[in-house]
Amino acid sequence: PEPDKAAVHDIINNIKSQGVFDQFRKECLADVDTKPAYQNLQSRVENYVNRFLSKQTWTPNLNKNQLRESLRKQINQSGMLTNGVERIIEQVVNPKIFQFIKPRIDEVVCQHLGIDPK
Image (cartoon, rainbow, N blue to C red):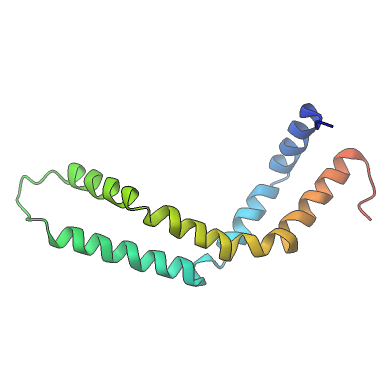
């Protein structure tokens, strides 16, 4: 059976209004910079930027916005960010799903439906 879209919408609004998404974000960001995937991505981006900038010749009329946009485009096309973020999610978010996120969602859903969570 298809879930009641109105009920799903109400539950999502409850989750948002109770600050649950903010709790998830805070929990996931708390230790993200200690994870190898984050540190690796940071290092790869810094090295990429350094190589990119080392190939540029500075002049007083250098268009910094154009340079920035070119760098951004190259980084995005490299796939480095997409792959790096996927690894960060694997290391940061996935372990928290059953430990932190799912129990909290279950609690809010049960509350909304008037069900005893136990």
